[in-house]
Length: 64
Image (cartoon, rainbow, N blue to C red; front, side, top):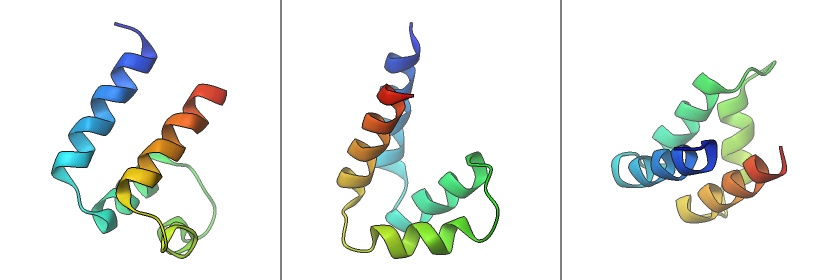
């Protein structure tokens, strides 16, 4: 199993198990940042569905 397969599997699980707020909290837990990343992410993603957020995260992961 490679990294892309694992990330895809994780996002499928997250999509089923977490609502948008919980997903942002999850991102806060795994993302080292200065400041209130949950608040920042909530503001930046308020017009996006969880599906859009997941797709953007996948795209970002592919570019990294």
